[in-house]
Image (cartoon, rainbow, N blue to C red; front, side, top):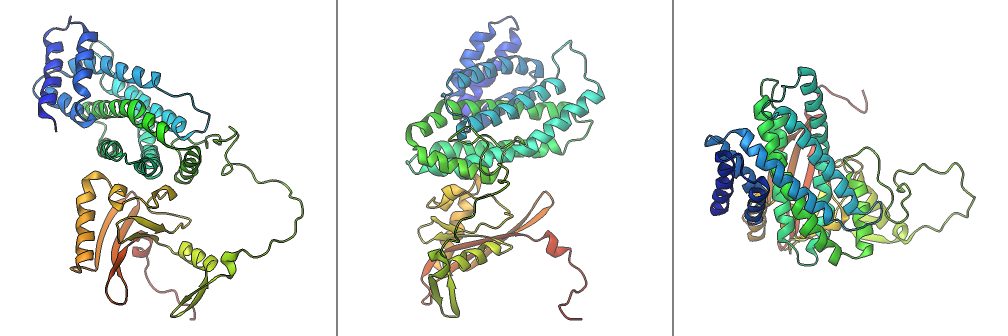
Length: 407
């Protein structure tokens, strides 16, 4: 944390409180100038510390509203003219939805001085809608983390995606805490939303003025099309599938199947169906091998000896999102920054031969996810890579009694 910059931000908040008639635009300009040197989480920390040191929420909100408007206006002015269905147009729409919902809820839960307290019915309706949007927000984060960031990283741009991911994680934690609050926690909920709004507005500003501009200057049209396909696989915050990138028509994934099709000769079997892969215990065609791996009730990912993602299977239902853009990406960049050190330690012990496996288990909503890592070695013990297998074991844990093939 940049403690000096955080102190500067707190001083500006306190100045506004001490002099309510001060020029808010000038204070907001100074706040924004200091804010560019810190993370969005640091900005939220400065505001939280100011509140804890006795500055009323109303003073924080006044400055917050002004400088957030500056962030939002500058970000929107920087938007490129892009065709409907472009990945960045989709991200613009999704983070606009998330930010506007958080801001509306924050204003209702923390009304300005003199404004009437909202009715219980208004509160319930707003919180219900906010929770619904927060529940959909991970799809916005995951599209960036698993489809956009890997492509940007191919051009040697690694630091901005890491910062963006850490801010996603900070928002995830706030959303989780907000979802656990009760009806009596109105002010706490409002303060959480204030922190989320601060982080997200700064986050969006950096995305649109730095990250997205950089992406547009490097990523090629065929890569944007691949990113869009990955977006379709991961899913969207909004119910409707966005228009296709090429034509603006509904995407192929969402289009209805034709009512009839002309008769055509049956094609010859693809090479994948006939080319055999010889193994010690039998042989399989490439077609069969791919189908078998995708039929497994487990997410499988293989990371090679150079720590790069080499393969993942594509079952109908995944535990964690995967996009084909991650192929060739370092596994360290596939994890949140706060957990990279754990990944590196696992790989170190696998490569050194100290360990051959590791496991983790965690609750994700109704799922109980079991994650296993295995060192993959050849017959002479040389390290070839790491295999990750993840599955939801909640259905397995619920099994009781017996079900036999033959009674």
